[in-house]
Image (cartoon, rainbow, N blue to C red; front, side, top):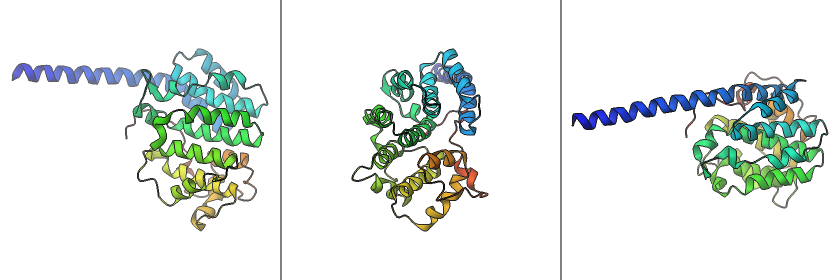
Length: 261
């Protein structure tokens, strides 16, 4: 019994040490990426140069690909050639581990979806439908994500921006009505997902409850809302209005600690 207990404790201690090493290593990669993400949202002049430098110096393929998604937006914004950046984005490096789909990786990197949505809106505004289609193809091949809100929201936004017959209305409306019980999702961002859905419905001219429609000016006052609604060209219809609760859904950022569902 004592030997068995000793072995069990030894395994536990080894695991704790391993987890700490992994998290410390991840934090080292995450720290500068978070700063890049913040500068992107704040639209600072040095954001693009910082992202380029980060990608050049970063050794992790996971974080390189996360940063390329940020870089893509900046390149479109600056009317630069996006071919290399777009072609080099590999979402499997972000959401897979050891070539296998990982729910844990999705939870660790769920903020990536936020900038995918922003990139799609920017591509639509600039009529870069080749970029919009390519981004959608990169996420749509990850079939294992079909039961996630993030994946379905991406699909609905794409359909809306491309003015497909359904235009994603069914899922967007269901999301606002709480019809996501059967899906997996990052609970930290569900409020933000709803606001993005409401903004997309407004872009499509679809009806929604007054609560969400009246919330759009508050969303427009947030960094993410301003960027998204500006690229959807609906921000003039719902001009930013400061609200004490506006910042609650404006994180879109990465937590420095591990996240599990």
